[in-house]
Image (cartoon, rainbow, N blue to C red; front, side, top):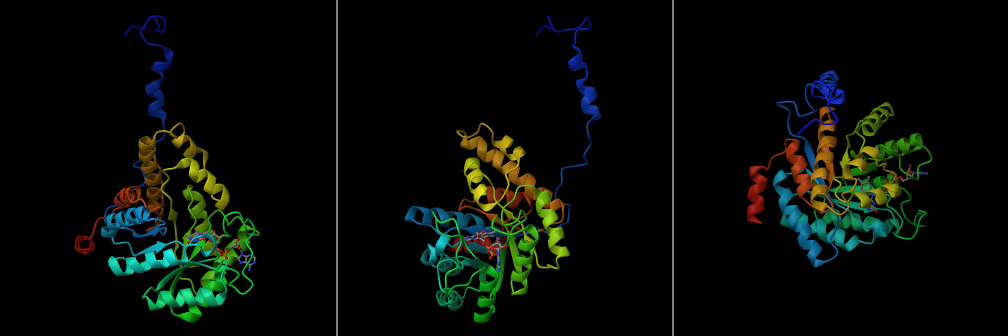
Length: 330
Ligand SMILES: Cc1cc2nc3c(=O)[nH]c(=O)nc-3n(C[C@H](O)[C@H](O)[C@H](O)COP(=O)(O)OP(=O)(O)OC[C@H]3O[C@@H](n4cnc5c(N)ncnc54)[C@H](O)[C@@H]3O)c2cc1C
């Protein structure tokens, strides 16, 4: 290649002459935030949704079998908006308890049911051997924007936590919002609400997904200052369908940073590259949190195992022999 038309009399232009100087003047990092040697692998939990069809059921179970050897401390199964998946949630939780080596947690919401009905669902879980409930207020069913408590129901998640505690000594997890729940009066009011849920008996909070580690870490500081001491486990959403996440985030109050949008720019019709980019984006997020000292993670798997498995691997989690044996025997 000639330098004709671009070169100086010495054969290179001024722009290229300054490149090395610019690189040499750039900031220096000893390493990307990573896992210090000797650190125990983090504790993981995985979230699934109950399948609607036989094909989706098969997909869920192949996801469960793939993730099972990672021996998460629990896996949770969501409850549809307005209580629409009550039977399917129960059936999925029961099958996980029976047919896998995993410990299931059942999500349960206050929406569209009386206290007696919700209590009956909780009792059925206890009788089926399910000891962990993720207690939520829930969202109104599709098409309804305003949440209205059932006239005889639990109004808010804190009431449900107290109700569950009165039924049996469940382990109870609740939701937390680093960027504030969209229906909250203020960030402080939302934090007071989280404190109420803990005071009512919850022993863990799981966050809504977020993309800026900083907003989560600042939320931890505010929570600690408010007297909350239980773990607030980061909820990690490995993004593959970016446009869907943008839509969903607008509803649930999670912000989508411009840098994330730039990462997925132009990839709408390129699922393969999107998946690779998604793995990098999620890996950077969890490694940053891990470097900040966080060692528990909850993954929103969307019933797809690959990204979660890869990110768990990067975090230092490896298949355990016991879980592998259980999987092989199943
Ligand atoms: C980890 C996780 C799992 C989830 N799983 C499901 C699921 O399986 N099914 C489902 O339908 N949804 C699920 N959701 C979504 C959740 O149901 C919604 O975000 C819902 O809008 C709020 O639920 P909550 O339990 O946080 O409610 P709450 O803690 O009751 O809070 C709801 C809102 O009301 C406010 N508030 C609370 N108490 C009062 C009061 N006394 N007076 C005035 N305002 C009050 C709070 O500040 C907040 O804005 C999940 C969310 C998370 C983070």
